[in-house]
Length: 53
Image 1 (cartoon, rainbow, N blue to C red):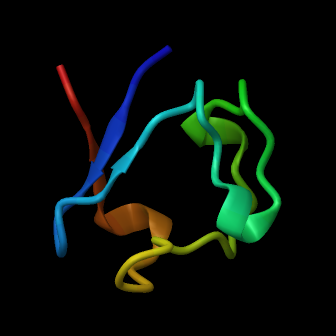
Image 2: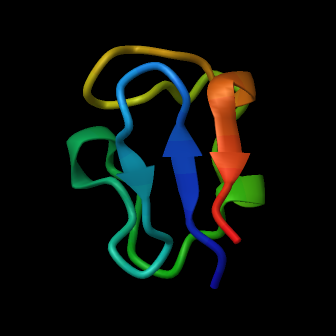
């Protein structure tokens, strides 16, 4: 699965880990995160993330 990086703080969303701070289970692709999901470190919205290649 593809990882995504926050352009503000550098946090990396790893779908294999999910985001336990916001009750996002492991295996959740970035595209399936809720619209209102934000970076758990700095609070940036989803549109501030870029796919890591």
